[in-house]
Image (tube, rainbow, N blue to C red; front, side, top):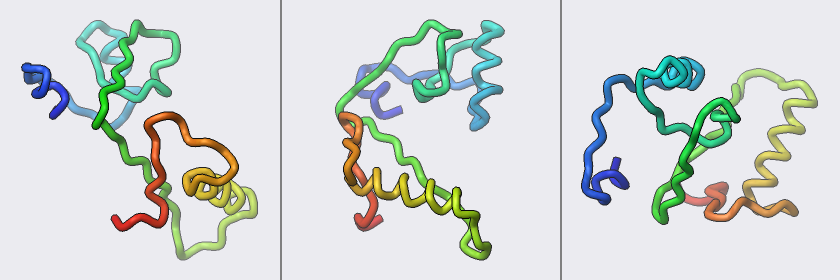
Length: 103
Protein backbone atom coordinates (compact mmCIF):
# COMPACT_ATOMS: atom_id res chain seq x y z
CA UNK A 1 0.00 0.00 0.00
CA UNK A 2 2.83 2.40 0.88
CA UNK A 3 4.50 1.71 -2.48
CA UNK A 4 1.26 2.56 -4.31
CA UNK A 5 0.72 5.73 -2.30
CA UNK A 6 4.34 6.68 -2.98
CA UNK A 7 3.60 6.43 -6.72
CA UNK A 8 0.58 8.73 -6.37
CA UNK A 9 -2.37 6.34 -6.36
CA UNK A 10 -4.44 4.40 -3.89
CA UNK A 11 -5.62 0.99 -5.05
CA UNK A 12 -9.27 0.03 -4.53
CA UNK A 13 -9.59 -3.34 -2.84
CA UNK A 14 -12.88 -5.09 -3.50
CA UNK A 15 -11.76 -8.35 -1.91
CA UNK A 16 -8.79 -9.27 0.24
CA UNK A 17 -8.02 -12.92 0.71
CA UNK A 18 -5.33 -15.04 2.21
CA UNK A 19 -6.15 -18.12 0.16
CA UNK A 20 -3.95 -17.76 -2.92
CA UNK A 21 -5.84 -20.33 -5.02
CA UNK A 22 -9.16 -18.55 -4.46
CA UNK A 23 -7.63 -15.16 -5.28
CA UNK A 24 -6.08 -16.51 -8.48
CA UNK A 25 -9.39 -18.15 -9.49
CA UNK A 26 -11.05 -14.73 -9.22
CA UNK A 27 -8.33 -13.28 -11.45
CA UNK A 28 -8.74 -16.21 -13.88
CA UNK A 29 -12.47 -15.39 -14.05
CA UNK A 30 -11.61 -11.83 -15.08
CA UNK A 31 -12.78 -10.23 -11.85
CA UNK A 32 -9.69 -8.11 -11.27
CA UNK A 33 -6.03 -8.47 -10.54
CA UNK A 34 -4.01 -9.62 -7.59
CA UNK A 35 -0.77 -8.79 -5.89
CA UNK A 36 0.76 -12.16 -5.04
CA UNK A 37 4.22 -13.68 -4.69
CA UNK A 38 5.73 -14.71 -8.04
CA UNK A 39 6.05 -18.28 -6.78
CA UNK A 40 2.27 -18.82 -6.92
CA UNK A 41 1.59 -17.31 -10.34
CA UNK A 42 3.15 -19.94 -12.59
CA UNK A 43 2.54 -19.52 -16.31
CA UNK A 44 -1.27 -19.17 -16.29
CA UNK A 45 -1.27 -15.40 -15.99
CA UNK A 46 0.28 -12.34 -17.53
CA UNK A 47 2.36 -10.81 -14.79
CA UNK A 48 4.32 -7.70 -13.98
CA UNK A 49 7.14 -8.12 -11.52
CA UNK A 50 7.63 -5.30 -9.04
CA UNK A 51 11.02 -4.96 -7.40
CA UNK A 52 10.97 -1.73 -5.47
CA UNK A 53 13.63 -0.88 -2.92
CA UNK A 54 12.13 -0.85 0.53
CA UNK A 55 9.40 -3.40 -0.16
CA UNK A 56 9.72 -6.45 2.03
CA UNK A 57 7.94 -9.62 3.03
CA UNK A 58 8.35 -11.65 6.17
CA UNK A 59 8.01 -15.41 5.85
CA UNK A 60 7.79 -17.40 9.05
CA UNK A 61 8.34 -21.06 9.77
CA UNK A 62 5.54 -22.33 12.03
CA UNK A 63 5.62 -25.61 13.88
CA UNK A 64 4.27 -27.21 17.02
CA UNK A 65 6.62 -27.35 19.97
CA UNK A 66 4.59 -29.91 21.89
CA UNK A 67 5.06 -32.86 19.52
CA UNK A 68 8.07 -34.89 18.45
CA UNK A 69 8.50 -34.32 14.72
CA UNK A 70 9.62 -37.05 12.32
CA UNK A 71 13.26 -36.97 11.23
CA UNK A 72 12.32 -35.59 7.78
CA UNK A 73 10.50 -32.62 9.34
CA UNK A 74 13.44 -31.89 11.65
CA UNK A 75 15.85 -32.10 8.69
CA UNK A 76 13.72 -29.69 6.65
CA UNK A 77 13.50 -27.26 9.57
CA UNK A 78 17.27 -27.39 10.08
CA UNK A 79 17.91 -26.88 6.34
CA UNK A 80 15.59 -23.86 6.20
CA UNK A 81 17.07 -22.26 9.31
CA UNK A 82 20.61 -22.92 8.05
CA UNK A 83 19.73 -21.32 4.71
CA UNK A 84 18.15 -18.29 6.36
CA UNK A 85 21.06 -17.87 8.73
CA UNK A 86 23.34 -17.43 5.72
CA UNK A 87 24.69 -20.98 5.66
CA UNK A 88 26.46 -22.32 2.60
CA UNK A 89 23.62 -21.32 0.26
CA UNK A 90 23.32 -17.71 -0.86
CA UNK A 91 20.10 -15.85 -0.21
CA UNK A 92 18.33 -14.33 -3.23
CA UNK A 93 19.17 -10.68 -4.01
CA UNK A 94 17.30 -8.28 -1.76
CA UNK A 95 16.77 -10.96 0.88
CA UNK A 96 18.20 -10.88 4.37
CA UNK A 97 17.93 -13.28 7.25
CA UNK A 98 16.09 -12.28 10.39
CA UNK A 99 17.21 -15.41 12.24
CA UNK A 100 18.85 -14.27 15.44
CA UNK A 101 17.79 -10.66 14.88
CA UNK A 102 15.64 -8.91 17.43
CA UNK A 103 12.01 -9.07 16.38
